[in-house]
Amino acid sequence: MAEQFRNYIAGEWVAGATASVNRNPSDTADVVGEYAQADAAQAKAAIAAAKRAFPAWATGSIQERANILDKVGAEILARRDELGTLLSREEGKTLPEGIGEAARAGQIFRFFAGEVVRMAGEKLASVRPGVDVEVTREPLGVIGLITPWNFPIAIPAWKIAPALAYGNTVVCKPADLAPGCAWAIAEILSRAGLPPGVFNLAMGRGSVVGEALVDDPDVTAISFTGSVATGRGIAAKAIARMAKVQLEMGGKNPLVVLDDADLPTAVNCAVQGSYYSTGQRCTASSRLIVTAGIHDRFVAAVADKLKTLRVDNALLAGTDIGPVVDESQLDVDCKYLEVGQAEGARLLTGGERLQRATDGYYLSPALFTEASNAMRIAREEIFGPVACVIRAKDYDEALALANDTEFGLSAGIVTTSLKYATHFKRHSQAGMVMVNVPTAGVDYHVPFGGRKGSSYGPREQGRYAAEFFTTVKTAYTAA
Ligand code: NAD
Image (cartoon, rainbow, N blue to C red; front, side):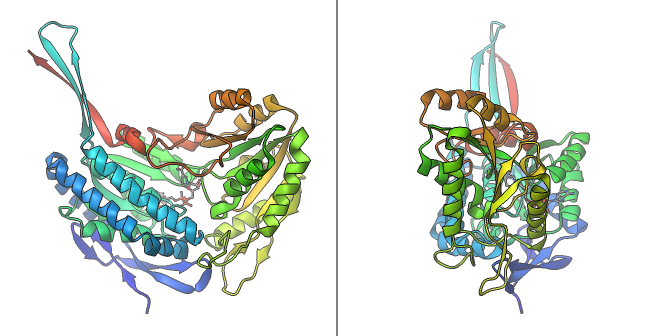
């Protein structure tokens, strides 16, 4: 019988109303475990526990908070191999990617352990003589955290750690497809010395637990990462009841390759950025915008490189690309392969379902050429190992194409020209701009987020996280 994993509410481990089976996408016979599914009543109990815990946590010892977060970070880092293996097993990214992500989660907790004692305000002179002005940050209350499956440890970490660091209490609802890593963080938090109710894990369906968080007046703020459609629905409901809301959503990120690019750098950025983690990254470069002089050499080199990549079980040494996360995402990827060809793009290589020793959702990395930026494969987020090459006549056209999208998360350029690199950094309409590095792959101590349809609300991560997880108070005192 599969191992059972319960929800964590008010300091207790509790069975869900039902349970869902978490399967390994590299080997569908392998069950990672059965994970509790809360119903609306259990979600409400988690919110109530977080509400009760808030006043004492918000005003308690900041040294205690810092110690707890530091301890959690240290344990995650010490167990990075084991947690990374769990991640690869439940989500399908390769073992080095899984271990790297687990380490990042540990670093995030440690970073916010430091932020607890660095939280600063401002003291200003008043324009009125004899009055002092202070600007301070205060916690918000109960925060609902709703996370996706594709970064199942880093994203819960980068929401939980700042929420707790700044004195909030939390109800975390991870994705149904990969709840195991968030459960592991909850288990570590449960032993770290947190008062009951400060952190609660409510695994379950988005339409049940997610909606309960979004609708409950006791949840002061919602931090969501996931798809555009879900995010828009959440924002509409949260704003209607005046809850604070932060959304990180999809991308259709461009990588511009100019004639003067170093070819190996361009190929590396394209292959890493478009296909690693099976292309299932919001920051993946799914549009390769390439100027005419380097186009044919670049396409040939990328296609050659793709043929050398090993697509296989994520847990095997030597695997470059793991499986797609599940059957329905695989169907989406395959549908877009048909759409792209029907639109007139050329499927140069890849896009084949692969059989491996274990039964999983394997797809070879697909490269379209002769694509136009008007095609659906260039406009809609596919979220799989599929990229398209769009030819541009020069830098100006490439920049215009890069910005011609409803999204604005990450954008990259490969060039040896300081002039174009500088211009691109200034004129790209993305929240994150990369020069000679892949569009995916970011640091944990600086802001993360996008513009236009990709993001809504303040940035996540780094010290900018305080903008979402705190509210500002201005106090006047007669001197
Ligand atoms: P999703 O929108 O299907 O689900 C995200 C979360 O929302 C899950 O926990 C889900 O259960 C929950 N949810 C679903 N319906 C809900 C509802 N009605 N009310 C409240 N919660 C609900 O997204 P996904 O498939 O898990 O993740 C993939 C998407 O996430 C992609 O679009 C990707 O680009 C995006 N993503 C964005 C970032 C970023 O930072 N911009 C990072 C990673 C992933």
